[in-house]
Figure (cartoon, rainbow, N blue to C red):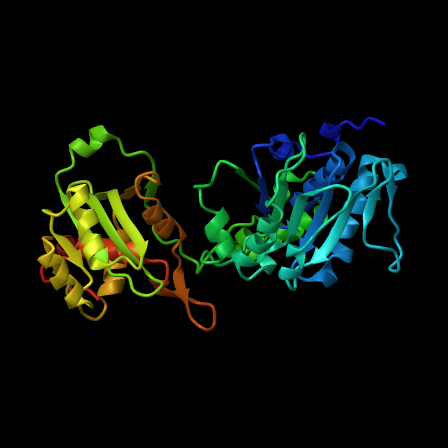
Length: 420
C-alpha cells in the first residue's frame, strides 16, 4: 500500500519532514504553542520510519503514567490516519501490551518513563537496533543531564549501513527564559546537526472554532499569557532584557576603524568561570561591539595574564571586579594594566539599565560565543509571587558583569558612578 505523505502532514511541517530524511541531522526539535500539530507530525514520522527501516523506536516521557493516554494514543491515531492499521499489531484495552508492532518486519515502538533515566541507559534489543527516540513534553525534565544521559547511551555504536539515528523533541516552551530548555533551543546559535521548528495553532487549519475563540479571548484579556500558552513564546518576567542586541559578523575592515577599546574581567571561582571581554564603544552612535573574550573555569591569574599577553591586549587598561584585590595585584606583577572597579549601592542596576539603553549591542557569535549566549539568555529576577524585579538574574551573567566593569568610566554622568 502506498501512502502520499504530503497529504498527511500540514504544509507548515514540510521542512520538518525534510529534516527527518536528512541523515546529517540528528536532533529534530519541534516547539511551540498548544494545538500546533507538533506531536501529530512526529508521531506520523515514527510510524513511517518503522515501516521504512528495520529499526525500533522508543518514546520517552518524564512521567510514565502519562504515556498511555498521550504518546501511545497519538501513535495509534497516526497509524489510522495513514490508513495502515492492517499492518500493525496494537490493542486498545488497558490490559494490552504498550508496544506497537509493524507486523511485516516485526519492528516496534516501545514506551518508557524516565522517572529514573539510568534504567534506560541499559536499553538493548536483540533483533534490530533502536534508532529513533522521541522525547515528548521535555519541559517536564528539570535538567538537561536527565536527557543527555539517555541519549549518549544510544550513540555508543555505529549503526548498520542505511540506518541513522533520529532524536525527536517536542515541547511547549517554559515561561522562564532561564529554563535550561529555553537557553538551549531558543538561541539562534545551534550545531549543524540540530533542526529547530516553531509552530502554533495558527499553522493548524483543523483547529476547532471554539479553540480559536478561546485563544482570541485570552489574547484580549491577557496578551502575555496568550503569547506563552498559545504562541509558545517564553515571556520571562514580562520585559525582555536587551532588546537592542544585534547578532552578526563583525568584519576585519570594521575592526580596523575601532579606536575606543574597553576591557573588563569578572573573576571566576570554584565552578564559576572567569569572564574577560574586549569591546569597542562608539560614543557618538551609542553602540558597543564585542571583539574578543576569555572564558574558563579554574583559570589561574598567571594563565589569564599569559593569554592576555598572547592576544596582545596587555597594554589596554582592564577594569576588574575589585572583590579580589589580590588577583588584581598579581596580574599587575604579571605585566597587565589593570585596576579595580569601584563599588556602591545601586550600581549593578544602573549598569544593566545603561547597557539596555544603548542604541545597539553588536555581537559576533563566532568571535565571542559565551558573550552571545549570556546576553541572549539572561532574564529578569522574579520575586516569590512571580513578579519581575528591575534586576537581572545573578547567574550565567559573568560576561555581562565584565562588560559593566569595562564601561565604568563611560557610564559616569556628572558624578562618579560606583559599581558593585
